[in-house]
Image: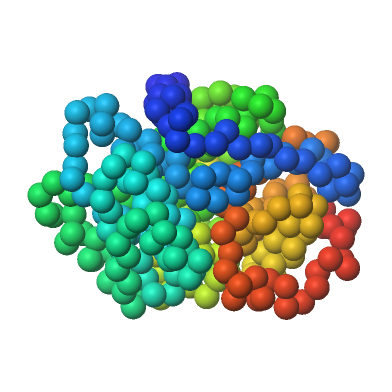
Length: 330
């Protein structure tokens, strides 16, 4: 990772004027309850409300740096990447068309439109992906995929790079896994800065294509749209680029929908900010890991975003979990 950390550092310089250096949050009562130090990189406070803007802006800045000037940008996404590319394209003065499945969050669809992009909806993710491939063939058009692109990965890695620069060395870093872009970038940043730091991924149990891929050694694709609240992790399969990074992880964890709801409620309450289920589920993986270690640990969690629609919010809060504090989870 020694050479690749330089790419993350270049990405950080490229995107500095486009993104926020988001805060690192802690909860003293959570640390007291768990007996460990947990730090949260709050990308829910990022431009467009999620880390995805980092990879999108870095890719367009990288193209400009290389003297490449596309006329039009296309992307495929079920959520935050759609907003990110629309935001980045607008900042670089480019038009954009974003292909999204119909089941995408209405909040994210409307936000993507508000940044000036044309949004094309399709019934399934497979149709969405096929449409973006066709659109990308047009002359003067550049496709920014949601995760399977080196410059997207390097851009996403700047989140962990910033956080580790703030809190210094930790025992482990945890990040959610959809297509693997954030997790791959996190791995590069953590290993490049602190080689002894463990890096772990977390995925919904009901959308566990990455876990299946790591178990079999080959990329596995979900057979249908996963029934999970973690819309940021609803990708059908990881990419060939990101899979090579995922193979180098120190651990990978699957989290149930109930645990996802539990931690979304508790992190919202403890950190006093809006957090997506995709972000909150990562704490389920942290607790799985902490059960098997000894001594007080210092852990960094990447909170990927905070964009929720009312339908998802209602499902999260249908049952009150705040009457059950995380006292006996480890």
